[in-house]
Image (cartoon, rainbow, N blue to C red; front, top):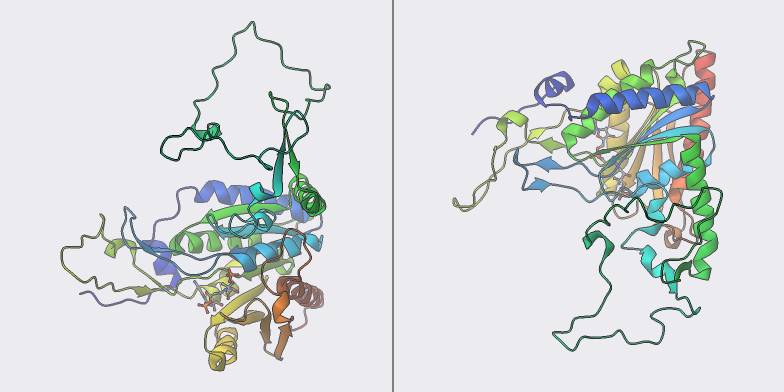
Length: 391
Ligand code: PMT
């Protein structure tokens, strides 16, 4: 069996093929950063969710990790709420996203928040047994829309479409409407307003990844674009850029050249996999890509005794500004900010942690994490202006 290897960042990128859409995504990032720096906004790259490690080129199996992307999606929202940051949201495909996360199918399925109001004003499904066909337990549901064939295009003699200045009646053909259950209306409306505003201002740009290799290609590309982009007065984003690295990045991977092309066969009994170490790219990010941006990395541990020493080690080794340490079991209600000058714990009551419901009533630790980091970032930008050191 071949020896496990340790790759430098350069060797990694020389060997791992880039994601197919990389260039298009980076051009879009460039436009996004330019637009926002010219509006006087700072830009933050938020990374979020877990990275996969495929075992085959024609991927049937892969290794994954626990992250649902809660930290990243929630943090992205809080950066947007501050009104001062445009957010590039580099996230694991299908993980939680800012705004829509409040209606996650597992914690708050949106269909349960809606009622069908029939033409006679009654609520469908209230007090009525569903009709059965008497067969093998089938319910006579109407066809599910995505399973119907698309409607044929109307013949030219069909009714003309209503002109745009005539509001369409908010009813279906049978006179039914959909109504949001009253307790959910206000929070949904407020969230929807924020979401529409964010879209209209062009302050959120999302890019999905799946594998650890895609993640690293995007991390490098986006950091370089952020590092190099200048506003219309020729000022680089530089220190006004923030990198908030909350994704759960795999430490090990199988290099492209060592990966099986086809599905690994099961005939030989046990499966032994040897993986190489993913290069630590933070040092290169600090030295070469980010042009003095404010870099926040996260350190996840399960053993409390090593959290702070490991976080401190990362800070020393990579030379960036701050490590946010967290433990798997308590990450929703406590984190520790580790800087060269010392460390500071942030805690919220344990009962208040966790995902926020649609009512928006529960405190999230990310609100306080972002408030703290924005304060530090302010200082970092100011000290850069005076060319002072940041401790
Ligand atoms: O998504 P949630 O369920 O809400 O969970 C959030 C979270 C726990 C995933 C998040 O808060 C978090 O801790 N993210 C970082 C997880 C992680 O990858 O930790 P780690 O200790 O294994 O490695 C991170 C460190 O490795 C970085 O800080 C950096 O020092 C280094 N690194 C990692 C990858 C890489 N390619 N280069 C690096 O330099």
